[in-house]
Image 1 (cartoon, rainbow, N blue to C red):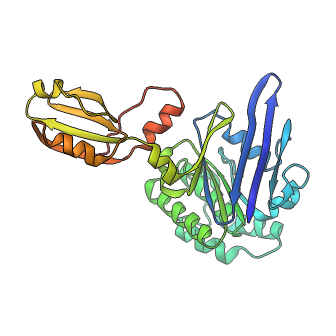
Image 2 (image 1 turned 180 degrees about the vertical axis):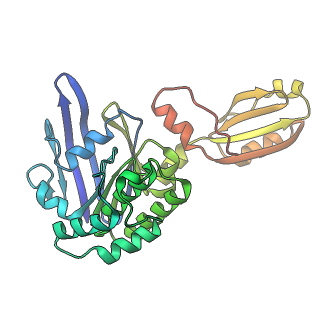
Image 3 (image 1 turned 30 degrees about the horizontal axis):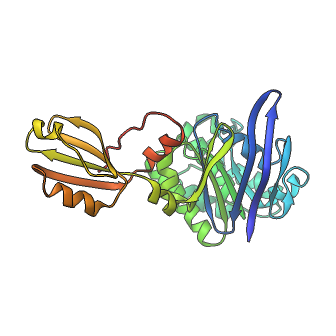
Length: 301
C-alpha cells in the first residue's frame, strides 16, 4: 500500500523557490530517507506534507487524503518531530502523555512510561530543567507513543548521544517491521545509511536522486590504501582503469576504486607493496559528487 505520494509538488516564497517538482512515494512498512544539507528544501517539503504550508502547485497525499484540505484527518495517523523542538517549560513527560492522550481520545500513559524508560527520561522532570537532548527525547516519545501509521521526523537525532540514537533506530525498525512507515529527514548520510531502505536526495529544492541503498552502493566508489616499500615507488603508482589515485603521502597511496576489487588485487600483486586494504562502498563521496564539492576521501577502510 502507498502511504505517501507527492506529484510535482512545488512551493515558492515570492521570487524565491522553496521546493520545485517534488515527486515522492512512500510505501507501507518502508523507512524512507530524505537527505540533503541545510537549506536544500527538506523542512519545506515536510511542512507541505503536514498541511502547514499550501503548495504553490502540485499535490501531496497521505493515506489517500489531500495534505492541504484533509490535514486535520491525516494528523490522527501521523507522528511528527520538528527540526526545532519547542515545548512548554512547565511540561513533564507524564503530563504530556495525559494531554496528548486526551487529544487522541485514548490512554497513552502505560505505553508512554515504557518509552520514557527506554529513552531514559525522568517522567516528572519539567522541560525547563531538561538538557537539549532530553527535550528531544520527549518530542520523540510523543511522536511514537500512539504508534502512528506514518512517522515524519525532521533531523530527529539533534542533541541525542550515540546510545539514544541507537535506541531511536531500534524503535523505528520495530515500527517498520509492524507495517508502519517512516519518513526520516536528515543531513547526515551515515544515519540514513544505517536505517533507511530507500533514499531521496534533495538539492536546491529538487530531487536529484531517488533510489534504494543497494543501488546507491553499487554506484559508490570504494577507498583502497596501498603502502609501498618506499615513497619513490608510491610516487610512481599508476593503477589500472577504474581506479584513480586520490592522494599520495610518503609511501602510502589512497585510491578510489569503481571497478572490481579482484582487478585491484591482481594489479597490486605485481607492485612493490607492503600492505593493502579496501573499504566498503563510500556513499559519502557519492553524496559530495551530487553537490559539486570537493570529494573528501573516507578514513574508514
